[in-house]
Image (cartoon, rainbow, N blue to C red; front, side):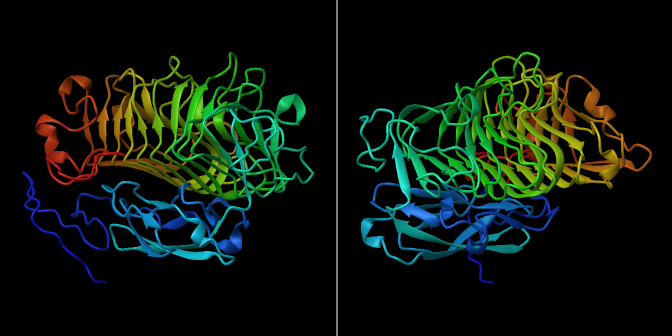
Amino acid sequence: MSRRILVGLLLSSLSCVAIAGAGWRLPTGYFVPAKMPMTVVFPRPDAETSPWARQRMAYADGTVQYRIPIAVQGGAYPFHYTLVSGPPGMKIGQDIFDPDYGIVTWTPTSSQIRSASYPVTVTVTDQQDATVTVAWSVKATTSGFVFVDPKAATNGNGTKASPFNSVAPLFVLHGTMGPYGGYIVYFRAGTTVLSGPESIGNVQLQGNGNPAVWLGYPGEDARIDFSHSKVLVDKQDDVFVGGLHIMNARTDVLNAQFFFFNQNAAQDRVTFFENKFEDIDDLSGGDSNQAAILFFNPGVLRNYFALIGNTLDHFTAELVDTYAIKYGVIEDNQLLTGNGPSPWAGIFLKSDVQNFSVRRNTSLSQSYGYGAIWIAQQAQVFPNNDIEVAYNLVRTGDVRQPAFVYEWTGPGGALNANPQIYVYRNTFTGWIGGLDDFPYTVWEESNVLIDDSGKTAKFNSSTGGGKTVKFTDNLTGTSKDGLIDADGRLIGAASQYRGTRGFEISVGVNPLSAPTWR
């Protein structure tokens, strides 16, 4: 494989940085070798997906950007993305310092409309030169789309030129086929109140009868008010929600906004991309299943979940609560200002989860009862295994509170056969900890751990009965030690570890490229 080396970027602690055509090449010690092989989570091949799946349709009038993430679980991060083939004008952010890193963009024109779909191929290369190929097809068209604009006239027909002014025409009772089943919905600027035909006004997605792809119109603040409704997802694959500002949650029911619940069938290939969730709160006397997105525990494993580039603000409930999922990527999400301390967590991997990468997320000021990231390790039907938590920044509001918690709770512990949890290259302010109720192995490697409670130290050593914590090359201290600045970056004498400890992806003390996060 040919490589193009650019030499000459002089750093104070390193003579040069090599950037190769096969990816942004980090020197040994500046990345962590892969814990799991690379697996494509999104987009999946056409043979698996519905013809109307988000990645397979692009509105072609020269003004609407087609925008999808490439989600890969496992591998040695950061990746290099190459667009091998695609229609004219399609692009991808190749390296971590590029705009739209790992995101495919395209603004098709009406002249590109044709009956055949365009084949697209992307290769993803990790720091150890492992590669995966992502292949799908996309059709440039203006068919199969419906538009909602809360400011529109009442007599709209759902086209872009004459949109509906409410969601009333879109949804029918579950078990029937609605007129817009298999359509992609674009919401325009303004606030659309969600309401549906189900009991107490809810919307149910089942069997392709209602549209399962919801998008905010590019460049507009498309708000959906969930005060009077929530979305129940039954036997429905290929759910994609992107670019929306999702507000509020009804308070008369457990307030998961998107509730994936079927007990007998999985919901495969689910993606939430670049949404803002706001004012999601734990109800008085509520429980940890109240979240913006809740996957309840079915009798079968779901496959391929991506939660990428989302924001949660003004909250006390979780962004996501997961049960029974295999192959998940939770990446580049931000947890901002809470409505007071959260009794639960921000990202909650609760039960029956396998092959997950929780990567490059930030939590900036909130305090949590169970940490910004909580891995409960319940195993109700399936064992938990192979979870990595990497390159995350957690700055708790109180450094004496938990930042990351790993534990076993509830039934099913016997199903867990020594699950492997890899916790590396994170920066946590607040303690990390866990229980030792069954055999497990936690690998804690190259983290920055700032803890004023002293509890992290108790979690550093191995325990008996097959319960093991492997603690290597971590930089630890208290808030008085001056190891990091207000943004979590290493400072002072600790800056010598920049790019080798903690969440910063960089080379040397004074990197001239590669921001710590987008």
